[in-house]
Length: 292
Image 1 (tube, helix red, strand yellow):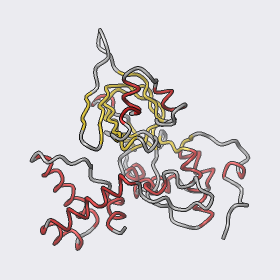
Image 2: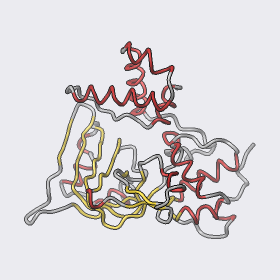
Image 3: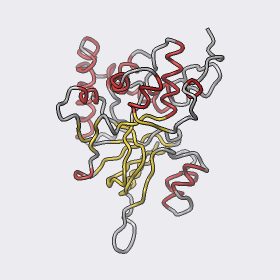
């Protein structure tokens, strides 16, 4: 059944689209509850964000090594582009998640740490960030029952950079960790539109890997997992098939135990000096990989 004639959420509410809004505002727009957003976030089908004001920490950005001369981070660090140009002109960085400024010493910028392997390069930038950043924790439903109703977030990520950015994460300094509560959680227009579309169709929200650009085609077809994530899926399958201990235990246990077994095994390999270009995905993502 087609929903092309259905009005979008902004027309229904008779307001121009908002770039982002609080989850309490979004709950009114979508006729749902705040706890619904927390649930969708925790299971990994949407990503909620927090609005930051000049927060200090380390930003790690991984880019692929193909077309290394057009590496967006290299162009930025060489002074050829600003982050504003990366965002607005080259459509590479997130328009929601701002890099406020790089941290400087008395004389100059603190140089980034650069880690390179055959497939990718990771940059570690000392910087201040601002605006809307994704909350990486997948247990924020606890805010509904926590008597203090707040907790500190230790890791954030930029919202929807281009596919040239393989991954990114921001670790706030200890004293800079943002305090999250129900009043300062935000949701973007893109996510509101996705929720509304699935409410009309009655179909479950897909995992985050399927959400990226999946609404750019007319039929709203699910976008295949990107080549980078296919490599990760194949890598996990290889681990399970090649290691007798993992193979014996992992498929007969719970999702949480499965995630812990793989995480501990990868951490052990890294501690022994094995170079692994992947981080263990979240438990919901892992479950999806194992059912490809």
